[in-house]
Structures are given as C-alpha cells and as structure tokens.
Image (cartoon, rainbow, N blue to C red):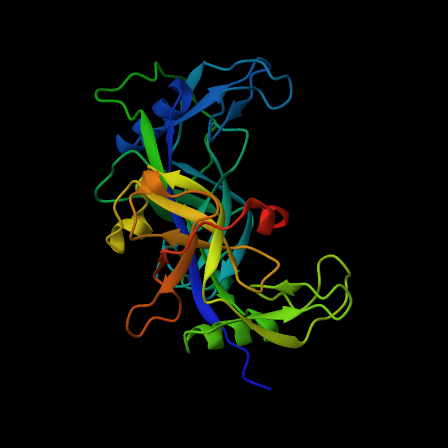
Length: 317
C-alpha cells in the first residue's frame, strides 16, 4: 500500500469590522492608557464594555473609567506559547477584575512560573510601548502589590481621532491527511494522471475518490483512470481578486467550472483558460494544462472538439 500523504495547511483571512460608540471608546481609550467600562441599569460595571445588557438586553451607553489595577479571579498556566500569542515566554492566562469593575477581563500575566500565580493576587496593566487602539495595547498584566480600590468615574468616551474599525486576523494551522483513496489520487496527479474509484454496487466512478460510495455507503477500492479530457457542466465567472489568485498571476475576470472528466460520474473543479471568459459555455470540451513540476493541472483549455450534447452530462450538473 502506498504511503498516505499528509501536509501542513493554513487557512487565514483578515476579518474587518466597524465599531459602534461603545467599542470605539473602549479601544480608543486603550490607546490613551485609559480603561473604560459600561454601567448597566442596576449599577454593575462591565469590562470589557458591551452595547447591550446581557441580562436585560437593554441598550448601554453610560461609560465609566476603571482602574488599571485589579485582582486575578482565575488562571491557567501556558508553558509553551504559540505563534502570535501575546508573550514569547511561558505565561498565565488570567481573568482579571479591574478595580471598579464587576466583570473580569481575559488577558495574560507575565510571571516567572506557575508557583508565582494564585487566585486573588493583585496585578496591574503593563502598557505596550506603541499603542494603536487594540486589545494588544495592553501588553500584559504584571504582579503588583497594592490594596484594592473600587472607584470608577464617569467618562464621556470622547477622544481625539477615535478608532472606528479594526482588522482581526483569523488563522487556523492544521495538518491535513487525505487518507488512502485521496493519497492515491494525488500521487497519480503528480504523474499527470487522474484516477477515481468505482463503486462495486452501483458501478459509478468517483473523482476525486472518497474511499466509499456516497450513494450506496460501501467501500470503494477499484481504481479507474479517467480523462484526461472532459466537459464543462456548469461554471461561474469570478470578478473579485483573491490573495491566492493574485499570487499566482491570475487576473479577473476568470472562469471556475465543474468539469466531468470522460469516464467519471462526478464533476470536479477547475479553472478554464485559453478562451475569453465570456465564451465559456456548458458542454465545452476541455483538457488539462500542466506546468513543469506541478502536482495538479494549472487549468483546463478548450480541445477544439464540438460541444458535448446536453444529455451526455445532464446527470452531472
């Protein structure tokens, strides 16, 4: 049996959002070394502030300033920081109730070891040297011997040049293992061949193979080489440039299509090239174009054959 493949993969995108008056004031305040909470109708001060009372759903707008010192309410030690975490050295995740607040703020505590951390310990904010209006303006918390104070003072929430929007990077690192069937499929692609697997019951050939027939629910093992030519069953015209296509030199508009390879009973995805985007059509006969050293086709181009009859691919739409 050939080795099963695996590879590290990353899914990453920036999430951009606008801020309402409460979140705008909170993040702008951090830039100015000021921590703001919001007061509820029953007098509680919530930090971080929210726009609606989580209990009553009442809209909240009364901002109040709290202290930069507080008390650890609970914690967990992180012995091995990961990429983009606040500190590069081991630290504690902590919930800190700042003096004057009734709720706790999640952040990190810079401490020499877990023996130096305890529930109830007093801490203070260590501000980042350069602040932009983000939660990372709080570099971390650090131990601080002081008496607790419960003072909070009203604040207008007005600052010069307020922060009105933020960009939050979302990233997922993981290892993908395609399994036996798709490993064989990927290995064949590296040889410029396309293979699927035939269901022993319904005799359909699935490309890419999944190791089992989704219709009959039985395992598949018989390999079948298909293509290389195929038929466009349906398609879309892409008009928005994405980062990954820009890096590949692909200009918009371009066409992304479902292609039923000859001998396959399932259409796969592929980009259509070698033809103006507005001339791509259902039934267009295409073939793969490979680039040197690639493990998969770069795109599919027209073969010059007459278009396939609709009845030949209607079941694959």
